[in-house]
Amino acid sequence: MRYSQLLIPTLKEVPADAQVASHVFLVRGGFMRQVAAGIYSFLPLGLRVVNKVARIVREELNRAGAQEVLLPVAVPAELWVESGRWQKYGPELLRFKDRKGKDFCVGPTHEEAIVDLVRKDVKSYRQLPVNLYQVQTKFRDEARPRAGLMRGREFTMKDAYSFHVDEADAMREYQNMYDAYVRIFDRCGLAFRAVEAATGAIGGSRSHEFQVLAETGEDAIVACDHCQYAANVELAELVREPPAPPEDGATFLPRQKVPTPGKHTVAEVTEFLRLPPQQLIKTLIYLADGKPVAVLVRGDHDVNEEKLKSALGVDELVLAGDKTVEEVTKAPVGFAGPVGLEVPVVADREVAGVANAVTGANEADQHFVNVNLARDFKVARYLDIRTAAAGDKCARCGQGTYQGYRGIEVGQVFFLGTKYSQPMGCNFLDEGGQEKPMVMGCYGIGVTRTVAAAIEQGHDANGIIWPMALAPFQVEIVSMQPNDAAVRDAAVKLHDELEARGVEVLLDDRDERAGVKLNDADLLGMPLRVVVGKKSLAGGELEVKWRRAPEVEKVKVAEAAAFLEGRIQAELARSAKPA
Ligand code: ATP
Ligand code: MG
Image 1 (tube, helix red, strand yellow):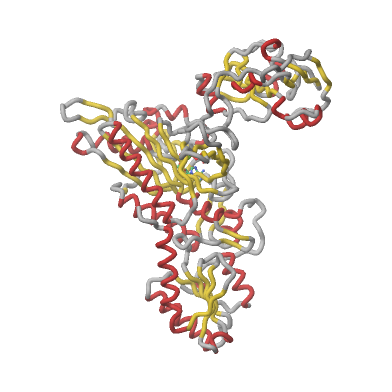
Image 2: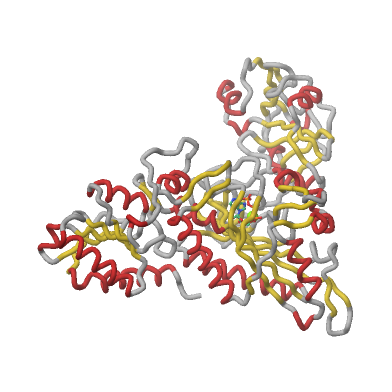
């Protein structure tokens, strides 16, 4: 394809709201344009990349035995009422009424719609198992759409749903999809990790996320350096031990109130008192199903709200607002402490090990030092409620230590059991003629987020470095002097030869300065670049360069097409490891 005939509106300026590389380069490179917060239009280059991800996804799902379908974007509310999610899903669900006043939503995920399809047309064990998938636009009215395609409101997802006669068969398919996902992200040329994950609004009891490793990832992951265990910190386990006693021989010093004017945060208070953060006990006031509860964790730890919610056995858990905190502690926010509180106090088990701790004094600008649990306050329950972090001992093998990573969640697989089939009456007749609910799994891939993740993993200061499998074009030819007949002819000839070989090639035939073209080539990020210039052409050669490496290779004009095709094939084969 000729650059001059494509709409590639590159920009010099970094868009004002763009902070991460994928957002910056997708806009600067003319791949996409924002229409509203979290909503984008794709231009020709951007759409080529999205389609490439979708194509790999389709090929691998078809290979794994799933069948493609297409469900509606507008889903009637009554299906969501049946599953119970119409009430539960919250403001991320975009709801609307049709002209007759009937409620609908724009599907953020399609468990309800697929269950409705299957319950009407699949009745017997003979029709099972079945795995149906679609590649479709989803809408989630995210509170904070950000980072371009990473967290949009409108985005493309591949979602698959499988139906089975029993748990064993559903677990077999879970593994089948897991393996397909490994092949998909390998073929995309991404470095990723599958980690154990929480199930969130989708539900179910077993789940893995596929996380592309990148500094800008929103998710924190821990992975054991000794065994295979890796998990999102949302649910990563910690070694379960009884409450740790204070260190041997610790003597309880007399409790004292000390002024800490204007010091609110753990860092401010401990720096001011010249103590390490683990000497402080943080007190947070939560509303658990509406009732205030004080939650204690060590100063160097974080409360894990997922764990806290399940440990307390409540449906709703929110951090209390300033007003509630002031009512409960009788002090401004930032000075809460457990001593003298009248609400129930729960603590992370490691809090028990802190002798002579620092806590808030429930009084403006005052903290206590030398607080001792056994003497000064009463903990109702000790729970595993803190977030695992790098350096913690592995809960699975008990030997290794967790390493920390950041990741971008590009896919997730769930074992659902009968969470949707039971309430929605998605039943089948088994061999003995007995009616049973189908056992389900569901499996999602963020197609557009995968595009962003590829860029987060592959870029430099000048632009994108696409993996071969996702690049809009595999090769870009830069014609340095397009007004020179020999140069122009050699560039066109190579372009035509490559196209004839099935190589995807972009020919920059614009009448622009060489510097502009080379900068744009770096910005757009095609994996291989061929420079056709007067000087080397006179010697019968072209200059070939990988986008990812600085070296330039001279290749004979007559051999160039075969040489490039060979490089491309080798590169594609390298990422598509045999299953
Ligand atoms: P997140 O935790 O990032 O909000 P999720 O766990 O709610 O995502 P799933 O319901 O598992 O998302 O959806 C399947 C896939 O769809 C995710 O793995 C992710 O790749 C993609 N996805 C989800 N939300 C968005 C979004 N707002 N923008 C782009 N892709 C998304
Ligand atoms: Mg998810």
